[in-house]
Image (tube, rainbow, N blue to C red; front, top):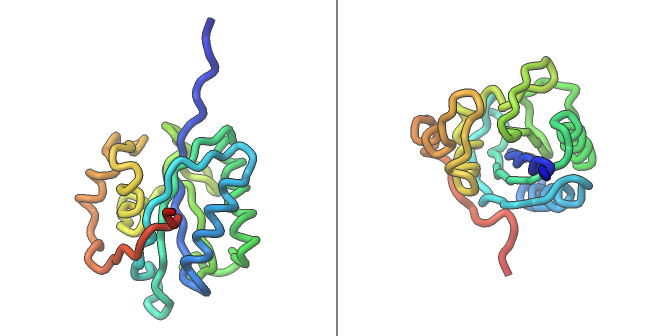
Amino acid sequence: MSSAPESPVAYLALGANLGDRLTTLQHAVVQLAEVRGIELLAASSAWDTAPVGPPDQPRYLNAAVAVRTTLAPRALLGALLDIERQFGRDRSGSRWTARTLDLDIIIFGNTTIAEPDLALPHPRFRERAFVLLPLAEIAPDARDPVTGESVESLLRACPGRSDAVRVGPLIPTT
């Protein structure tokens, strides 16, 4: 008797640089955990980081979460976009603008997808310390499905970590 395959683990990046950044990220994690088909497994610390793109915008708070999900990648992306909209995210402008909330799928199990509106793993995560720092906290041994490298190894090779500041847990401990 064979059992159904276990639902994949997905790693998600969270970021915000407008408004009360920490509260936004904390509430976004709560919203994620309430989505049917998503089980929150771990959450990183929040990290204060410099923006990528135009320098005339506020610093970001970034974090990462691990979730187990029964959702397909596109359905998970749809849930993330819905949560972004609930927090006032407007995706009609440049992708390099300040934002109330940014949610991205970084790794979705061993899945690779290369479509115009969905790329897995995230195509630029390997060179972004603001993604790798929080991800390495919760999943240092997670593997990039394309290169096979661990998150910890990718982080060691990634520039741009010097100005990142760990500001504390994303989910308060009791």
